[in-house]
Amino acid sequence: MKVKAMIKENNALREQMTPFNRSYFEDMILAMRASRVDPVRAEKLLLEAAALLLQGQGKGRNAKQIFGEHPEDYFKDIMDSVPARPERSKLNYYLMIAWTALTLFFGVMAIAGLFMEWSGGSADMFGKVSVFTLIVVGLGSIVLMELLVRWMSSLSENDAPKAKTFDIKALGIYVAVAVVVIFAGIFLDNLFPVITISPWVSLIISLAGGLGLKFIFFKS
Image 1 (cartoon, rainbow, N blue to C red):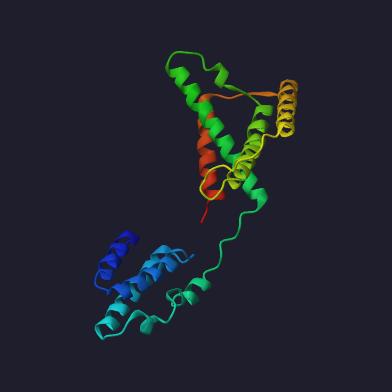
Image 2: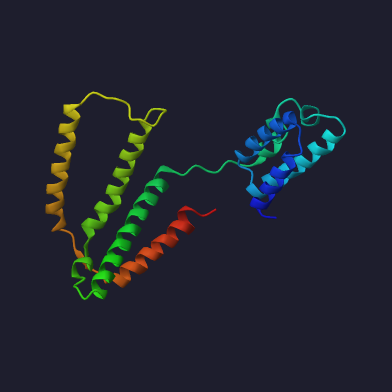
């Protein structure tokens, strides 16, 4: 039975419970669905618990008498037995960001180049890429993501940015860094080789990158 079907059956069983038992059982559901237990197994266990509760309810017993004082304790041993997912290392996290950025970059190059070819135009500008550009895309995506994460972490509980005084010093530093990066980019771009690559090859690289994301970084 699929998860959606089991949830639907669970909802039907809850309709047969007394208000107290239903409230108690819904707390059990919240605890179980928030755990690391596999969704299919979790719904099967909840269905079994619902059937057990209705059986006891028919004999005049309430949820506390059947499962105990606290709703979350009944499945505690099962929930605690599931190993925690290993945290993604910082290096793995940065590699994933750069990989994703380059995958999207080649995807955009492929789509733009193929569109220009099909429309009768020249795809030359989308058929050449500097090695320096690839480095900037990879490293720049990491920096951009870190800035975004830090900005999001500065939001208040109501999702509104915290009011901060205008920091002219910080603005000056950002402007100075941006100017240095731009001029360094102009200079370094001429030092790195330029790769000629057709839109179809860019498309293949982008598709391969997408598969790599799935099977390397998001594998079960």
